[in-house]
Image (cartoon, rainbow, N blue to C red; front, side, top):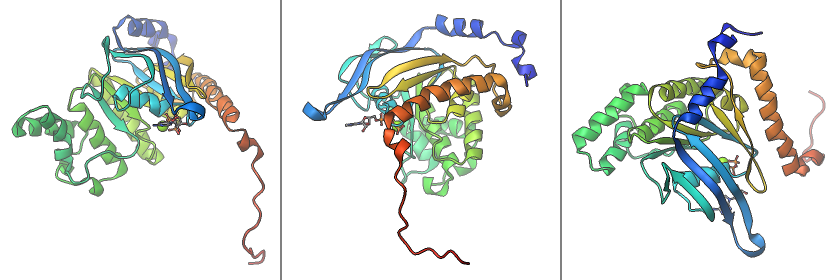
Length: 298
Ligand SMILES: Nc1ncnc2c1ncn2[C@@H]1O[C@H](COP(=O)(O)OP(=O)(O)OP(=O)(O)O)[C@@H](O)[C@H]1O
Ligand SMILES: [Mg+2]
């Protein structure tokens, strides 16, 4: 099945990527390494990563569990240092967290004792804005994420999807250059997740921002990304960078097209081939002995 959307004249992938690569590099990793522990316990988690991300790109990072995706996110966020190499934003080394790199991480990182509005106002107030100005900015973003009716609610009164929308607003109110997202929709049900993906796409298409999005979900990566960075584990290295040559805007119907399936197979192969290598024990799972008396008659 080839949809109208996928007609070659409607989308020129080569031109699309040429335009991306012509944009300035916003984030560059040069031989970036992260080594944890010492002596026998020493472990290289990221090994000499080289990567250039261009302004306004949407990058998804995938790879098997434990390959270093969150380690990479934390270094880019400035939450952790790194062992060697360089990591530059607009040509400048990263020295700690900054509002120019907004974060929306796994789990909910809202302040539970602050309302939605107070959570979103936090960044602008930290930057020294007056209460009135911070409130106006916060309201603007709360409207964009469609939660104006909830501005005085506390996080525990919101659904998971709503909390993540607040987390996105709280990051974007600071007008970051880069939005870093580590499995932001991992805890959501499939329906809410799909709505959040569309919402994020809309935001990205309408604001000047580069997104680095870590996910386990291959369909999600293909739906969202310009390029997918597939990491391999032990040590974390870039196995392949895949250009997602599918037209935008992308809708869930795209999942049914042969073009999507072709990419899906490629990504699946890159991730799962390694998972088997990673944990051979999964291949030889023991037979579970019966531990309780189970009645066979009803
Ligand atoms: N601060 C730390 N000290 C020691 N080891 C660490 C530290 N942080 C991460 N690691 C190790 O680095 C490896 C990569 O972890 P990381 O959290 O980056 O993986 P991941 O790709 O995000 O996995 P997942 O998909 O499960 O979230 C793991 O083996 C982890 O135990
Ligand atoms: Mg992780």
